[in-house]
Image (cartoon, rainbow, N blue to C red):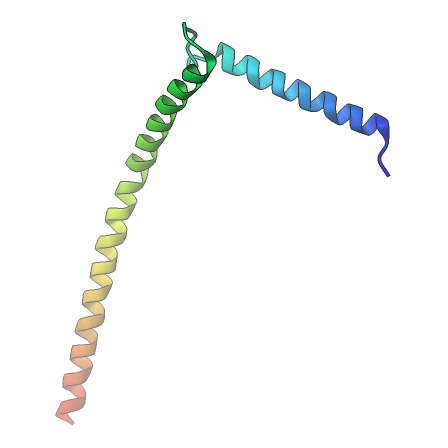
Amino acid sequence: MFDCETLIDGATKSQETLEAIANTMYESDLFPRGQGDLHSHFWTSYERIAKQSDEDFLERHNGDLDVQLIFECFIDNITSLSHYGIGRFLLRR
């Protein structure tokens, strides 16, 4: 079923990928080095990155939401007017 060489190659590639990720994080400015235990360092970095990501997301999508709400109100008004106009037309006949 499984070839030992395939499993070893897969494990080696996974280890190399994890080492590359760890090196990137170590060299990145997003993960500053400092005193303290790894647990608190991780959560401090996580909170900072999450806050920045949330702010970027909200900034990008708040404008889109405004446009969608304005468009929805516009369509709703047109629909209401068309129903009112059709009703008046039918009552006249």
